[in-house]
Length: 105
Length: 105
Image 1 (cartoon, rainbow over the protein chains, first blue to last red):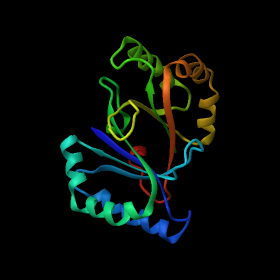
Image 2: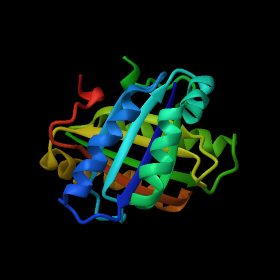
Image 3: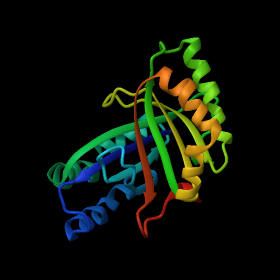
Image 4: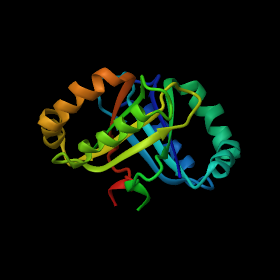
């Protein structure tokens, strides 16, 4: 299992219709082949400057690579992510050997 | 639900016995009151400089605050986290209204 996460903030004002549209349209990512457990999240810690997060899981590196190259993902990044996202950080996780991972149950 | 995550790197060499001991001893956090779905994770994206992550979930802000103030957490931060962690970033998530969160199922 590979859990791909990205924490980000938008150029749009909080609560704006543009923000709402971005999040709604990002649901296209959830239905891309190989994507499991897609989540949209609000970032609430005051210890960083990000406002939102997406999280998704892939079975293996091949599934993750296929998602990265999928036309729906490529188009979303080009047409929405690059123009509308102000800052982001990608963090990817795999289980530590022998350590139980709650979310695969 | 509040998902508290922290991505970090240690001062210890990769694969060292000190690294192993830190991760093993961090399991004390998993059994703190109010902590659900505790995970230890390896950070694998080349797009940041962190090596590990912890993730846990709380029912609400009161449970999160109780964890922060719990003697086991306070002692771990003082005796292990501060001296052994080189850099970290805390990221906390809550579900976006109306959006299904896979990991609460």
